[in-house]
Length: 226
Figure 1 (cartoon, one colour):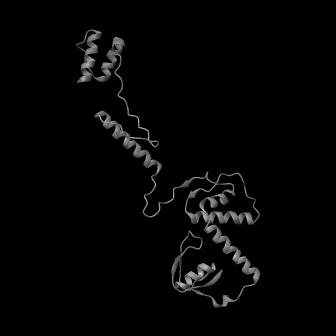
Figure 2 (tube, rainbow, N blue to C red; figure 1 turned 90 degrees about the horizontal axis):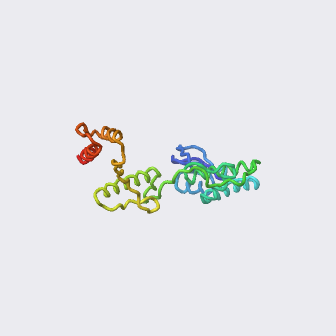
Figure 3 (tube, one colour; figure 1 turned 60 degrees about the horizontal axis):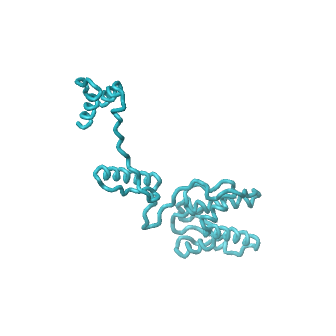
């Protein structure tokens, strides 16, 4: 670690997540490589009094912290999930690397403080949100958007079917989407007279002039075609 003070205000996130505004004159302590980079850029000034060589044990402790920080910061998302799962709960949340690094650090600290790691947890079973797309790449569609897209395709295919067109809509597996079939006409000849009268009433067909079952059926057909 290297200490000093801010000589030019700038925003900075000590934990990689929460951004703070560092005002001029504020004392800071950062990993040596980070401090030197900001120092060369003109944001920090090293504390000359702290330039004195540290005792060997303290220097080892600081080097250990820096090494652990670098190791976790460059670890893959899967490696971080494996570490977090040792807490007994798989990682859940947004797949932002900095958030996962922090959660992995917290778990490793618990283990160093004496908490036994828990094995047998699937590190990929947590509920996670989709990461943002890379610059220039389209945002992955959500499940809701995919459903809406399929619904629109199905409606278009049904319209095409009624107009004699071909059903080209497909589901997520590439199979044609089924179209709704028009309901089959009732077997009027097999219905009783009172059933025919009820059907005519439901359809709003006037059968007052019909005397026989055949006339009622003819009236229903005529009302349907009208």
